[in-house]
Length: 85
Image (tube, rainbow, N blue to C red; front, top):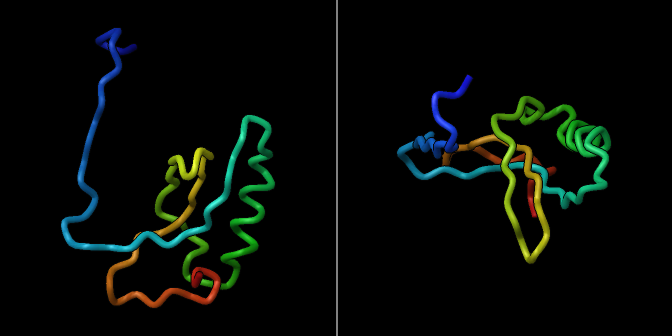
């Protein structure tokens, strides 16, 4: 049980150096089928080192809610074709 009634914001810094976040970005709505979202992700990254993701990131972009599944990559990482825009 929580010690407080008020939620706490917890922050942490995952990395100190500059990094890139590579992933598959999808628009989501209340009606989104997350089974289909994850199927799309795994089909997109199949056969790459990105099939094991690090993070799921939620954010807004141009008024839409976005769901981004991906991996942190340092400057030396080479993005597979699937992640090249």
